[in-house]
Image 1 (cartoon, rainbow, N blue to C red):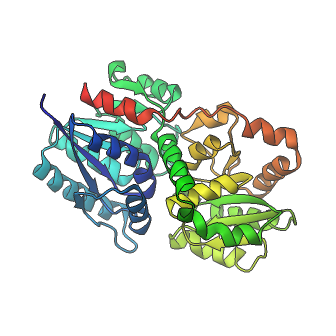
Image 2 (image 1 turned 30 degrees about the vertical axis):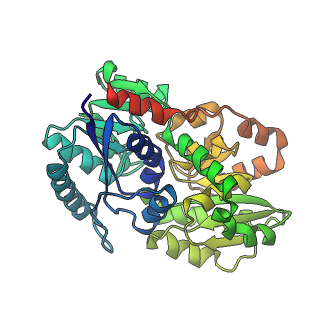
Length: 372
């Protein structure tokens, strides 16, 4: 039986987290010749995941430059990924999610008539400006991918509604759950991997920790200011502490450092590697986020998630009751967080809700489908 060459393309920390289980499985499966190309769209944060997961890329484009525009990034990605594909001549190109790397990887493959497999296909918010530009990136990939690995039935329905061939759509679950199970087991075996939060855990002993992440482009400006105000007001509670790994983007850092630095109950820290981030989720009472992946990861650990966005392409969490859309208005964020902190029944209704995003077996389903 001849082996299939699979080129897996990714460039950001979330993509790396969701694809390293796939890379592991492809590498271990004799049916495949696994090749990995990273774009470096997130440099330091990407490298942390590669290191902890033991992934050594065959190609690294290292595309990021300071203050790079989206069109300049897209041009560099498209040409760089195309050159890699011309060298590797893969049978399949695998991309994940909604980044510029994923969209350009899929487009470069399409230009070469190489079939594309899209992991985490079918997520739709219905608004091309929220999340921006990710909503359009997903739709572009979805328009010509040959295999669509939908994480949920809701995502599969969205693809069928766009007249995509139902035979190409497969509900697999989300690989982020596979990754979270993997890293949780690894930290259990090697506790030192997440030791650097110990000082904060001691500092905030007896307080309920709220984990915070925020980085969405559409929240830059007024949205970030509303989020910062909400954090400041919640941190005034004596029973609460906020741990906020602040994204490297200056549009986030400038607002958060100006508004929150020096508050006793707020720890503004550097971005966390994957083991430490999994630990933060684990010790948090609830999560405030505008991230996509955290909407999936939080419920896997029984943590209510308040989504600081106007729309979500992951409505399953909202429908299941594990997540709630609260936008970026400070009053609304504070109101919903306070309700969860003060109303035990409301808290447990979210914490105990069924996680709709997977059973930890998505990777094997994806690999088996690639082999058929």
